[in-house]
Image 1 (tube, rainbow, N blue to C red):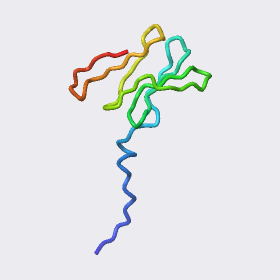
Image 2 (tube, helix red, strand yellow):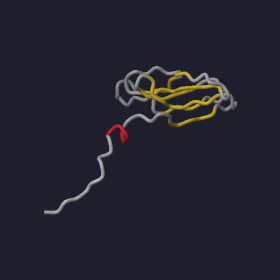
Image 3 (cartoon, one colour):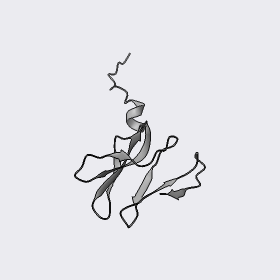
Image 4 (tube, one colour):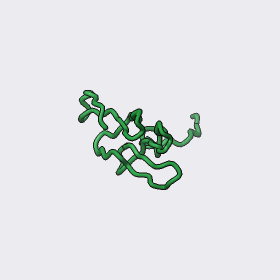
Length: 94
């Protein structure tokens, strides 16, 4: 009988869980940094002033999370796409 030493199984959370931070973008005016990160376990958009420690979530989704966002040209608004409970009827929110 053959015996194999298999490597340990990679935890499912490591493969499919939320990243700590992803999709970082600097605002058009260069004053802010935005990124996606979990807030209470759900991906949301976070913002901080460059050079300061004032990170805060600016979206508060508690169901499916935010997956895509972008800065408006004015550098003051963030836009993100969101559907309602998985209906795939994507809307742009601000």
